Every structure is written in C-alpha cells, then in structure tokens.
Length: 391
Image (cartoon, rainbow, N blue to C red; front, side, top):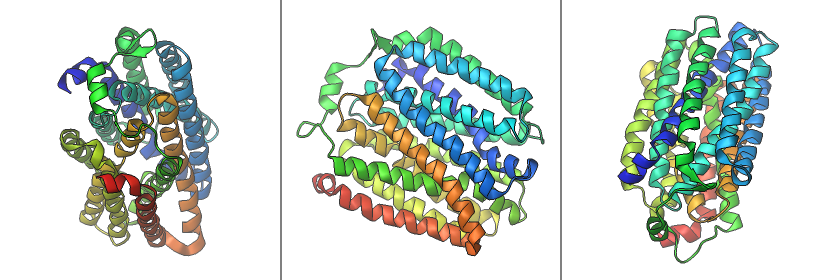
C-alpha cells in the first residue's frame, strides 16, 4: 500500500488542488447569492441546482471520456477550461455573471473529480484503502480551501478566483508532467498480483438492486448534506454568529476527516464495507438531530463531529464497494457515483429552501433531514442483505 501511495502521489496532490478550489467556492455560494447579490433562498437554491446539475453532467461525461479517450488529453482540456472559467469570474461576478461562471465551474469540476476518482478506481481495483488515501488528500484540500475563506473573502470574489487560478495552474503543470506515469497506453499502472488478491472471488458483479440502492442512498444523503453547504450558513447567521464561525466549522470538518480517514485507511476491509456505509448514515442522521437543537457554538461543533465521522466512513465506502463488484468500465461506474452524488447536491438546496418557505423553519428542515437519513439506513440494509450476511 505504501508503495502504491508513492506511485500515485501526483494523483493525490491533484485531488488536493482541485478540492481546494472547489472548497473555497461552495461555502460562499449561498452567502454571496443571498446576502451580497440579494437573491432569495429559493432563487439561490435554483442556481445551486443548475450548478449541481451541470456537476452531474460533468461527472458522467468525465467518466465516459476517460474510458474512451486518452486520459492525459481529457484532463488537460478540463484544466485549461477551468483556468479560463476562473479568469472570467475574476472580472465578471455580478448577479448575471456569477451564476454563469458557477454553472460552468460545476460542469468542469465534476469532470475533473470523476477523472481523478476513475484513475483511483483503476489503480486500486477491489482495494478500498486507496480510496481512503485519496479522500485524506481531498479533505486536506477542504481544510485549505475553507480556511482561506476568512482570509480572502471581504465582499469581493477576486481573491477567491485568484486562488482558483493558482490551484489550476499548479494542477496543470502536475498533470502535464506526471499523467503518463499513471497511464501506459491508456491503461493504468497497477500491481496484477495485488489486484487478483483483492478481487472478489465468488461474485464479480453487483446486483442491479444493490447498485440502485447505493446510488439512491447517494442522492438522498447528499441532498440532506447539502443543507450544511447552503441553508445552514444562513441558519448560523440567524443565530447571531459570524461567517467566520461557519468557515471554522468546515476547517474542523476537514481536519477531523483527515484523522478519521487516516484510521479508516488502515482498518477498512472489503467485507466490512456494507456495515461501514450503514454506520456512516446513522451518524449523519444523528448530526441533524443535534443540529436542530443547537443554538450555541458547542452544539454546532458537536453536530459537525457526528456529520464528519459519518461522512468519513460512508463517502469512500460507497465507491469502494461499487468498484469492488463492478470489474471493468470503472469510468462509467465512478461517473455514476459522482453524478448521483451531484444530483443530491442539486436537489437539496432547492428542497431545503422550499421547506423553510413553507413555515417548516430551519428546525423542521433539519428534522426532515434526520428522518430521510434514517430511512436510507433501512433502504441500504434491505438492498444489501446479501453482502451483510457474508460479513
């Protein structure tokens, strides 16, 4: 595993850079749309839905393109387009320009993150540990990105887009220099003996029902998680707390994710993945129950702790389980993982804004999120019963 980690370090650093850019953008989106551009929560939700919808499309297309064309060329094209989009956003970020730049950002970021995940899937095969290693670097990017918000954002997005340009510039240099190390004649470099050792011996295909349940769980979980990324930012301000508190919560989230996923990278096993997924969903459900009663900073951090633990064990578990039992066409399946995740992120802010507007209020919204995740736990248990009996 250590040898493989050294082999793919450029891929891990790429994950860090792309997610740093991603993580400096999304926490500000609802705040900037609602507070600075004076758009309603519902309108902001629709813009986020368009952004996430394009993220769905970008994720799926990124997987397909990565399977059909030279990975190096596809990644280079996406990175150059991201640089162009950030340059546009640097100068055009008003009520008309920002949504356009955001939507294009979603499309291109979805494609690039899927490409990185696809290469990880091809390199790891049935070994879920490399996914945990990738998520450690991705969440290090989360820490850097969210921590930068308090320093860079002062009613102007130009410093934010400047950071994006730095990240994409470094990522382009890294990709141009090391992409060939990760692929040889379009095929990833891997250890065949390790692949055979980790590949499931008694079943190589995931049943359609189980695959469907896992993908639906992604939609519903990310639909609720998206409240933390959108409406919770306004909820925290309504409690009389500052934007810096919201930024600090996400820095804490990133640091805790690195610690938990560092432990998961050592103990994660294929057999335990279904239980890992279920345990993560239970923790995420509990986080919304805590958040619904939180009115002070301590309660917010307690809720974020549960959310982070749940995220750390659930998020890498789903693509690792799907990858283990869908040998071949990794780009297609990892594209579906990213696409369904992005679909949940698209629907979540719209549904959350609508519920708040229907007099449910923030507490009602958070209780609905708790119930949805509890329902997903039952759904996953029923849909994954064959795997649970083997565990």
